[in-house]
Image (cartoon, rainbow, N blue to C red; front, side):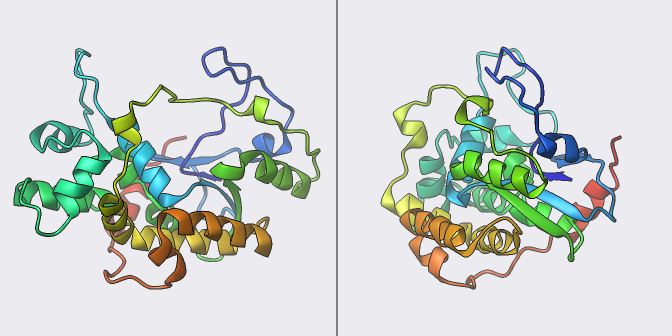
Length: 265
């Protein structure tokens, strides 16, 4: 069962993705991606594709940013307009500095509340923030087997899983699809030191789950876990070292129950 992403197989001119024979792609036949759920509750193996939580938050923010030149720029299901237009948060740095940093009065209390809830995944403003690591982690059986592909090491991890399944380690960077890619403006990827600190603080529980997923992954060796922690320290040093957070883990049991009730086959 794929958690939080889709494996796209076959030749695709739009993504420059050429198909590659793969036991991983053939074996991973079910998906739990956003509102799509066709995994059995008895499924024994779950595949995560994960990345540094701060990098994921930035990518998801830019992915959800509406294009006001389009006829229907806003989501019909998620309240993206509330963040981007009503609160005027057009960069993640702006959301962090105006919406999350304490003592900053440049945003209304409503917008500050929206910013925090959206990033926590308890507010339904941005699709990939709403469906976060906590959502997928709590949706699978507690004793399920986990395998992981790290976005920062996708080729090495794909080949490791492929070998684990009895296949050949012949996946290369040329096989990696490039989806949702557009050239970013400098301000879209910029995060000030203050923004990084408050974003990491807010993402603390997500970061702990990111570490838990890596620790449980059957294909991640100790040196690879250490490698990912060294990379995490560069963006969120405090949260990378600590094992608990100031805020409790949000209760999303109703969200998980609702999603599992929307079966799509």
